[in-house]
Amino acid sequence: MRTTIKIVVNGIGIYLASLAARPVLEFQGSGLQLLLTVVLVGLVFGLFNTYAVASGLKWPLALALVFAGNVLLLRLVAEGTEHLASRLYFENFWPVLAGGVIATTVAFVLRALLPQRSLREAMV
Picture: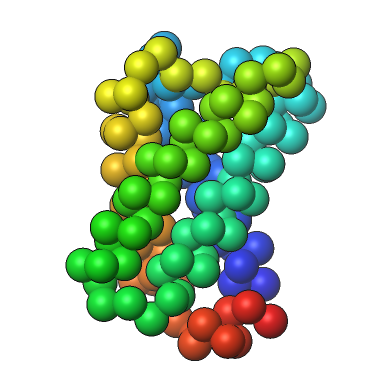
């Protein structure tokens, strides 16, 4: 259940990041296709952030890992959704960097609010 909450919140966080950085970082599309794209992006970010934050690393190293991973994921997801009817779009690198900051903030707020389990328990 915790992983589901993290996935949903990460999806909302990425969507809010796209609203804040519009038009240079945005979800393009409408209707059910847009919702499915946001869910897919939330799933990717939620899974990455859940396991990267739960990795047991000290917070400065975990913060650096999650930030670098989120920036890379934003870029990869934008390229991966390029040919879909609904996609994540960005103009240049700076919005991706800002989106990475927002996604990392969401991940660490979730870490502070939800009790942490060990990495082994989180993978079950």
